[in-house]
Length: 72
Image 1: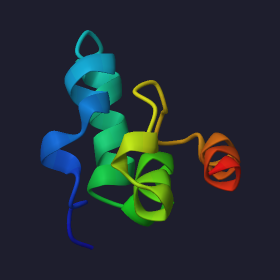
Image 2: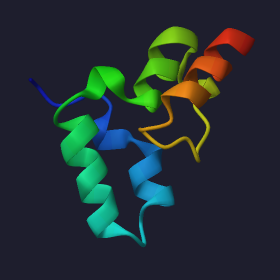
Image 3: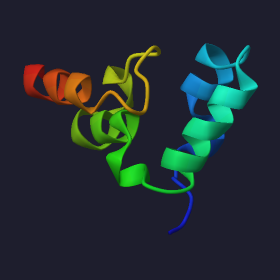
């Protein structure tokens, strides 16, 4: 599977995970370079737009992503 189209500019990794490079790499491997169609951030981005993706939304928070989507 190809890398996520959002990987290079994902604010989550550039701000929220800056002090946790090991954890960030696990998320990147799992979601950005693997199952990016399951990434909560990408789900919100594709459904309602970049402006609705919270900075603190973790890739594994699919339930939270669904709440955000349903509220929009």
